[in-house]
Length: 115
Image: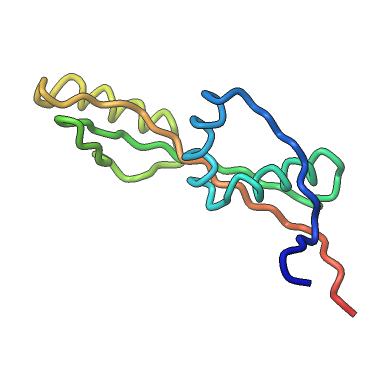
């Protein structure tokens, strides 16, 4: 039936500042806010069979408001921290550097085929 959604609306009222900060973080995971919240509920209820989280680190440079990666992503945080220290000690003072983390979540979900 047109105009009728499969799932009725549920109210969710997080603090506005938290919600705005979460938008790019959730998008960075490749999800929209609804998909992310549904996954959280599935995880809380045990509906997710398996979850694996990996993290990688890189050094990000900021020059005049332009941000870019100064190094490749590395699975070893200590190596990234060493590179950050090198950039801070040796690079032009007009560029600032910070450590950034990319977290990837892989979820395996049990799904029943439609009959």
